[in-house]
Length: 235
Image 1 (cartoon, one colour):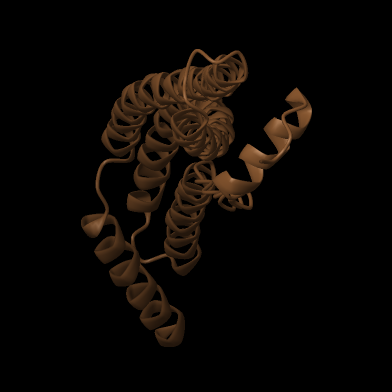
Image 2 (cartoon, one colour):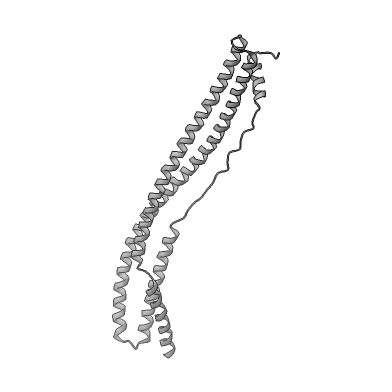
């Protein structure tokens, strides 16, 4: 009997100490839901910002492609003017060369912007996935909170009944052990609930490789190829 009484007293002391240190599970869950809603607002804001960057990068890609084509056309017009005698050949070569240099720069910028567009598009997809996951977690936590409130009511009622029954014969070892078992089961149930809540949230973080720069072509080679296309012979 002395052994069981000592065992019960030790278990009762540890269980009471754990309960005293624990915060109200209802308040903790409600705060967790509020925190999740704050995270949702931040994620939606981040999603809008990244989408704006993706749109801008796409527009830049199209703009640089247009510039490259424009410089190509200018170089051709200049060389045609030199061929018709409207402009000196040396001056035409210089201007056409400069136009082709500008064209190459625009193509490089187009490649860079295209890589950024792909990166932003991937980030948008990931953020949209995170937003959806947060929404699902909020719904899950709210349902979990309802269940937890109901379980606590049942647990409190059971605890009160067990307490009254235990106080009927405080010297009974069996009654004290049943009381200890009830408290331990309650703590295990709450620990499992917290575990489910903690495992519900996860983060995902991904990055893309940077786009490889295209090989630069020299302006002299571009000029020679363009003259060959236009049928201008070297002098």
